[in-house]
Image (cartoon, rainbow, N blue to C red; front, top):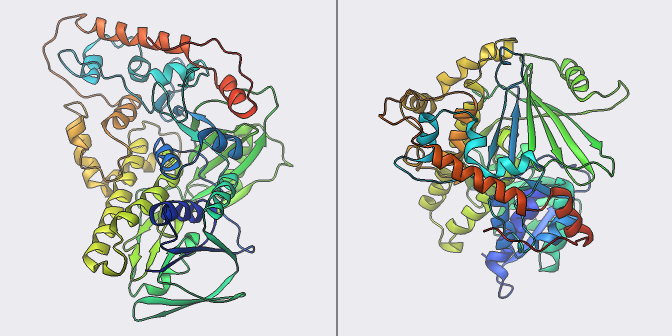
Length: 509
């Protein structure tokens, strides 16, 4: 395999290019890697919230954290704050909980979740076991003054400008030997189960391997599909469209170090704060509301006037059954899409590119290896699909047709249905979900959703009243220490982007 051609820029194409180049050409030009992107094709430009695995990618390809934050208007993300996903309380309070990236593991007689379930529960689960939640409440980061690049007291991720991230990666890749070809692909020539060449407005392109990053069109892989290759999730994930808008922030605005997910009448909205603006979107079901109705509802939700223009996006929710066929691999939207509720988009790109490197054996790659790659990616998508469905089916909302239809979707998720039956009588623990292929959401994440949505197991375990008070007193002390020693979000961004420091040197005890 002397050459690899990636078709499609944006985050999918350039993340793949950077990772493959690091894997194959770190110590010399072993493989010729080129990326073809068309000036006539716009990128979707969403996927601006991430999960902590993005740091693994950035470190693996040698990107400096400060440079990345400066170049992409990035901010810190401690987790996701969910609002209005259950009916209001009897007092009229809006339901909310957070899914942070950490959990204090304080083992006494039982694990921390069981300890909480058997305790007085005078605080919510996220408030009781998470340092990141305590930091978020005070607009703090998990960084202390001495924190080095990518280091922190608890896990974190980022919000970023997707377009700027693509441009940043493009610059990084080209500086390290990746060739950029600005051309429009007019035709894909395939023969005997392989892509032979691409016809472009700049001439013909041949290659040993092709990576399809052309988005929902899957321009390359679709040429090799001999039978129906699309596995839809539309029966269980009802949201299939989005209306989006970017709003500028005042210079005095302090960005939230978390994503906000606010449930609406036919789906949910996101709010992602960057350094200079906020990204906003309403993901909704076209079976329950029209684009015009969705835009009107979202406009009212944001408090924007009638002159404001929104963008509308169609989403194809599902995955391809075979994402590697012959000499072509689909990465990004061309391989599949799960609605952005838990910020899985960029992680799926990283995972696909990384799995390809692990499976690719150059000229000796066997079909059994391709089959294993496809199974790994399919299992990943299916697992993430179930995790997203979990958020919906635990809701007790009945105030719209959308929310009344939601419980039916559980029938299409047999594994999740079985797990929920088990979790009604025991805590969700590591071994319940340890067969994960995505390595993204463990029992820690499942617990935040289950207990944040008031799905508690009925435990009949003997305990003594007040037995676990010292556990949560210890965690509360840890939370207080963290809030005392960490940097505020705005202070950290100013220090990182503008070099404005002046903090007192402190450390966690």
